[in-house]
Length: 90
Image (cartoon, rainbow, N blue to C red; front, side, top):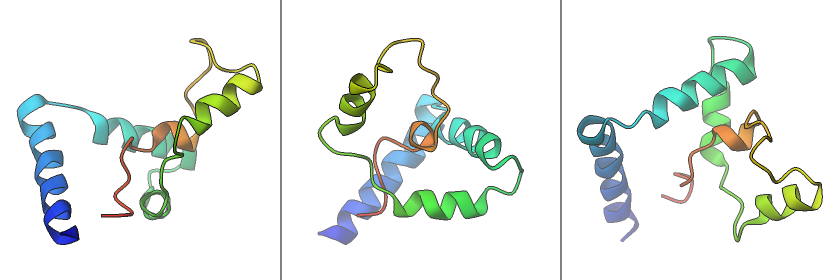
């Protein structure tokens, strides 16, 4: 089942770029370049592939507790550059 799911997600990902024109990969690359302060973002990409998003709105809750859950909070952290769905479990 895991192999089938992996193939499905790869096809959906490829389709989203070609058919819909989504820019999620380009935006991630721009943010990784900014975070790494270098055009060599491969180490950051490898690290990011091993990460999984926080579950159950954990990040929003932590930001709310710190008083940083508002529309003016900059989206400039590694967590902001990560895709919403992790490929780590695929």
